[in-house]
Image 1 (cartoon, rainbow, N blue to C red):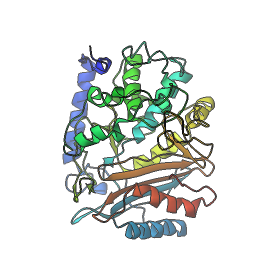
Image 2 (image 1 turned 90 degrees about the vertical axis):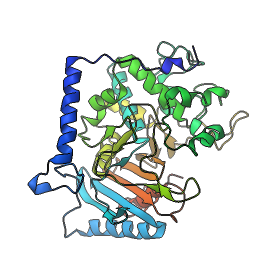
Image 3 (image 1 turned 45 degrees about the horizontal axis):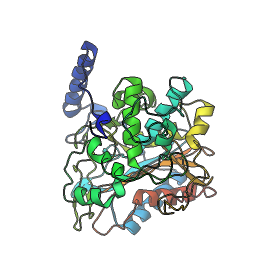
Length: 417
């Protein structure tokens, strides 16, 4: 037995109900590619009724200001496309899409893109629901579900969800990057990914500091599947994306993206190329690799950021599961890895908290996005961006969102870096 054999997924026995659901899903996919509702006509390859569309004109003053800020940011950052949606107390301020998906194809708000670490926010909320129902304890160690994980009798569910286990991050491992770069279409398994952090000693004793690691969420998903007895995609749909009404947020087991697609481009490999269908299996566990559109992203920001699905106690834990005060340089961990967690800027349980904002900010393979919610103003900002050949490095969706936040909530800067 290898050290990561505990992550092997057992064949699933499909019940009659499950087969029926699969048939229904297949029919739904077929309908998406053929049906066109007269009042909401979709474009070529569209998905029938469209409920994520540009805000009707004329725009009011606040919507115009947000859109002007976004247009300027698109020009300043030399972006290919920007999609945005802003809501206050659940009411739309503005929804729009600027630029092109690809040459000659206008960007539209209902185009789907990869949402990466937004899945971590959903998983963190779903875990806290189990905790508040007393089905599991946040401080339960994971040896009963992951018995072959080194130091499993010290690592808790809280540590995996809040990035305090001490495990290295394979995404920054030079050996992993040397393999990922030349092979962007490779399908990765959790066992292959975990082999990289498990080659290293822990940065620190579990629970004593903070450092970001995608490995934590690979392991948390494996534990949750054993705890609940259901695949993670079904668990999250039942607990989070379903209740929040995120109909266009879904897991993808292949590199495909539901149509219509916001295409992505990147210069990560030294030349500008399309990266839309690069394999995203390395980003997190199977069953949690999600795509979405900008309207769902804004709703996700609001639902997660407000704690809509949680008790008051669980929501407080979401915002600070004990991470504040952790991190900082130590003899075994540099300050660039063990980042200091402060009240103003820290990692929660699958979310990031910055000056009162609750957010997630995925950025990989040419896609960048952010969902951010400010509870004090009930303000949700969702932005997705794609690059041209001259776009600066970094998460440009963050930059756009920061400028919008400065206009709408000047007392709470959305300064992530």
